[in-house]
Image (cartoon, rainbow, N blue to C red; front, side, top):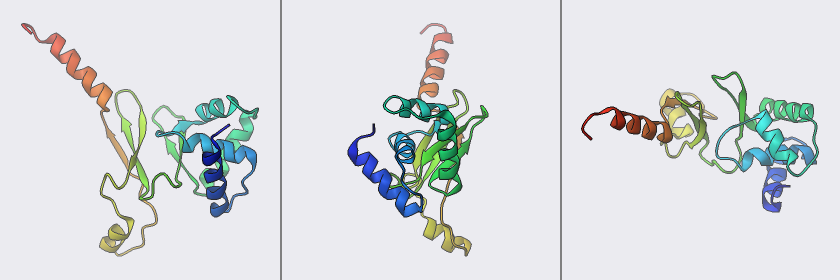
Length: 158
């Protein structure tokens, strides 16, 4: 079961989003809220199953409801599996996603780090911007370090 604070925050967020905060919805949302990276439906199911019995189909239906209502992001991944992450409280300025083109890892990136402001962006474009969700593609720190190590091993005389 999620920590009481996490469950309570999930209950409040779901209610504000207009979604009835049932136990299963709270558990599924909390599994995402506790993660700093988007999760597949299977990963969410595994996290919930650690403490609570839930049917796989129920998790998929809840994820569809949450994504369709805008409570979570559904991210298409290059491996074909959708990944999900919360849009609530943890990211007051919203967040975007970094995708490593080597290992496939997807990570959430706070829009404040990217210096993105929806209001300023909307003003510059003469339109209302409600959400910014960019996909940044590149090489993650782990893969970059591995590439440097591989390169160093290939250089003779060092």
